[in-house]
Image (cartoon, rainbow, N blue to C red; front, top):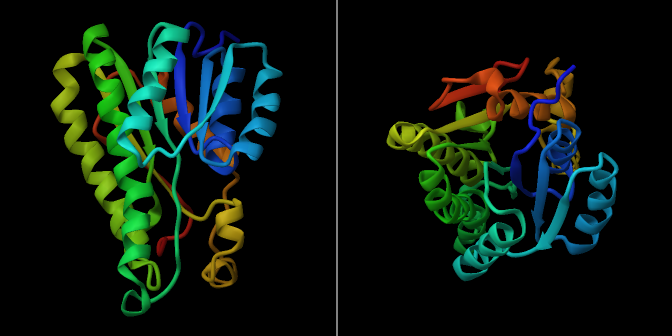
Amino acid sequence: MEKLLVGKTAIVTGAARGIGKAVALKFAREGADVVMLDILEKELKESKAEVEAFGTKVEAIAADLTVEGLVMDTVDTVVRKFGTVDILMNCAGISREMPLNEMSMETFDKIMEVNLRSVVLMIKAVLPIMIQNKCGNICSIASGAALRGLPGSSAYSASKAALLCLSQALGDEQRPNGIRVNVICPGPVDTEMFQKSAAREFILKAGGDLFSPDTVANGALFLVSELSQGVSSQVLTMRGFNRW
């Protein structure tokens, strides 16, 4: 079967572990050159070795993607080494579970910085390249919490809902430039973040499906490849549990 991403260069954020790592592996398996970004330097290095096994060009860059200057420098480095950026896959994200009245503004701001600001900075950095090329794919991982807010995760839910609306609006803005923008809203995914979640036992006892990161990566592959040609400003909901 022909590989779907041969000749493409993809940036994947949050690529050290979880969904981001699964996406990086999936894209490399399908022939893409992959740039892996994460703040977790040690884990990023270990994950890079796994992605390299598929034989494509792989670069791993440890960076804080909430800092505008670092993001711009990182994308400049990618363009110098790879020539272009065809795909931006935003997977970086954090959560802090507590009632909003107990949450400090510092924690609230941090969630918004990682889950929303970093995405905006990455998009703004790659858009000039994609606009010049008259093509490109941007896909972001939101959450089922973007569709129905989770008690105890007000800030997280708000950040993911904002990401969803951002993606829909951006897709409409950039359609004339040949750039497709979509978002994935998965339900519970078997990642380290979910294993630490206070909602884990409730969701599993209630019969909610638990997806693997690789399953979500399949959805990402669909949205950034020609399999979804013409699809933009859309939400791919991946959940088997109506309350998340």
